[in-house]
Length: 533
Image 1: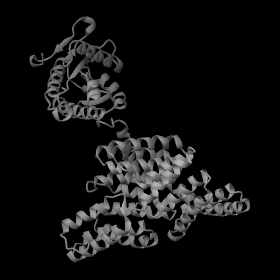
Image 2 (image 1 turned 120 degrees about the horizontal axis):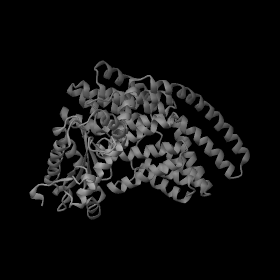
Image 3 (image 1 turned 90 degrees about the horizontal axis):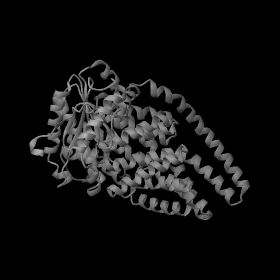
Image 4 (image 1 turned 60 degrees about the horizontal axis):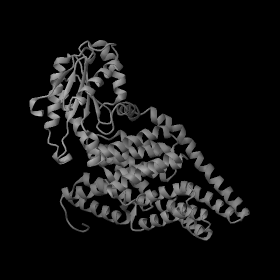
């Protein structure tokens, strides 16, 4: 594309490919961004010029010119503010956060990370919706606020799955695992790494260098030094193909390699790796990484029996560490203010409350929501009806097809239940009880009317075209119904037990039917249309 004339639409697409990316060939993309900026200027499109300039700033930072990026980013910020371009403002703050992280100013990193999420709106891409939240979690983690970071990681992970951002999800899980490792929670780090490996296997991804560095660091903590060194050899080899995430990447990888080599007893190789890492820290002003380089040098000298040198290096490490701690203490003081005094924090609190009451697979309400809402409904509504819906022969779908297909079926059934119930009883709601069971709550709907609507919903599910998902395997549901006036005790447990008992009758009666009434009085009613017989 370099040197060729392109239209505004093509130029915008080329910029988006750089903007919505996590791994770059930074040198090549710096040249490309510069050329795209020139072409945008020739077109006279100020918005494209501003976007290209910000891409160039990002690539400057990632090639190691952090100071140059810091000088340039103000121009992008001022243009975005003057033109009320929220998407560009959000992207600017995210890059600004990375600049401050590399400079060791974690408080400013958090401040800009918060702004990058606060500015997300309908113009933000799917990539931004996921990645900006993950980077906010990163910023919280390095500021010591892991209790606040973990919900953000969870949210980013679930959004990535919902939006099918599979490559971004790999990086979200990698960053999460590394942050848990960084704060010393190795069991959690291992748990997230396992999810990461499973995700990569499921989608046939080749793990990127940053991910391999995380895995190598965890292998070191487990005493698997030879495996860790081999992991880091692959990591650095892949890094050297040109993919670069951040300016401190290679310095980090070499430091991890040195730790693995020291653990394996390969002291000369460890020193060579450490020397390379130190040189990069000096060249790129990587203060935070340099502190750990001094620490590792002290450890390496001690392992060689060079105790005088180890003591001298430890003093150097201590001095550097104290300088860094001074920055971090300021960051800690600003973290609480940043978290609780911004509109983003208040909005996020409500979003996470809502998220906690949703099932992550289907998006329906979950058991927590049921427990919060049902008691008041039961007390206030004498005509309240509830129904438990259970997929028939669901185990056969999982066993004969796959659990992934089973998940697709659950998601589609959830959509059908929610759509059909909303049409029949607008004030009602659908929740997932767990597994293949769902709960439908129908306010102000007596049992006879509710049963007719539920039988219609049952037929809609059976008639749905399942071929693209399950092939020849049918999908049907059995439904057990209970009304507030029918239960022996007017409480949630009694209503759900009655509905569950009627569900059992439906299953025993041949499945694909609705059963309502009070079994103890012999008055259960089974609804199933003739075509299903």
